[in-house]
Image 1 (cartoon, rainbow, N blue to C red):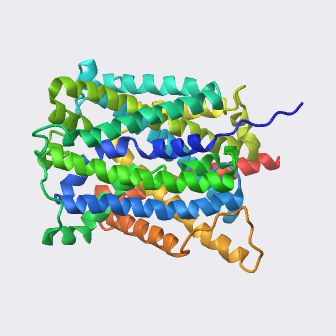
Image 2 (image 1 turned 90 degrees about the vertical axis):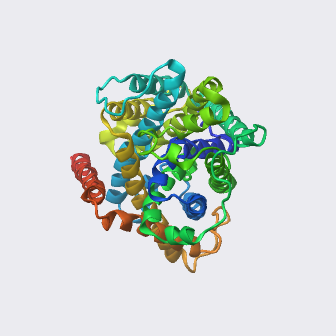
Image 3 (image 1 turned 120 degrees about the vertical axis):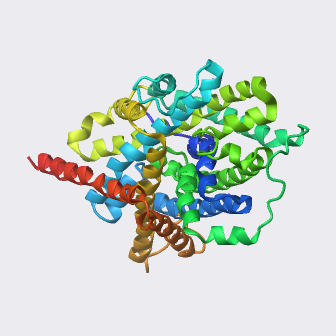
Length: 457
């Protein structure tokens, strides 16, 4: 007797998007943005710009997802629109950067935020593999992976609970300055100055956009589980668009609170002693050392939802690869609860290795650059799909991106501007990040042709 597959409902789909987006970036990236942008209005416009770009991408992805109607994200879309090698390479990058790398950065952030609570400080000069914050990160990764191995129902419930905890914490954190006397020790005015507009149109703004786009990454999360969502025609656009709008509002409000309560020099990554845990700095400023410890623990707990949401989405890409290529067939093995258990384990092992061996800052910038490249290809893919469907009758099950092609053009232009920052940077280390991104495509391309050759035998 056949059974109906277990599907994620609208609440879980929205929770996956929100949890993917609200994570490491918003609690760490301001420390890096303040190095090049020391103007509060420019900072807020930076976060607004990131939200607009992500929303434009969400409009486009919602249409692509409802046109192609399967799980797999860019892997599925680029394979069908352009060529299987393009989709395969995007899944290779998603495996390492989009999910394993992003899970690793989130887990490391959990380790950093847990430091004050557990009584340790992270020494950035300590290069040992088993530093205590890395051990905390590994523990969080294993814990969440075990939850999702149990099944869709258990994982979905855990995701909704963790996301609710995170949103409740952020809401309290945003409102707290209104009830605490003497909390206004930072910026008193967010009005633009002559310096503001100069910074907004500078290459420094484009460079800081890489940090912001990392913070917004995850706006497309629902597309990775499109084939496992109830009523996809309605649910996917709602999850992508409403999730992105909600997070944009949260990000702007939260960063205004950071700047309002804490002097910029105290949050600047270089000036505050190479610390990126902005949440801990602000919590201590607001509540003092003792209560600040409580919030450090809560931030660490809240970041679990970010890791959890990516453990939901990432293995679905690997599972789709397993269905398409016999070489990866083992990745299709599901638990009794309906989750791809082997894919979860593979992703977990890769994330664990990155926790041990990778650098936090470089990993974030690399992730932003390489994921943006494939997002741009997907948005271009929508233009291709529109051209191919021209003259055909409308499909009522397809969501139509509003004001097309304006959202697509905005998304593409912003991505090109950000990449130009790295391509034209005077520091060769920044330019090399583009080279590393390009080189990381080669193993995926080679592996694709090896897999195809084996399939023909």
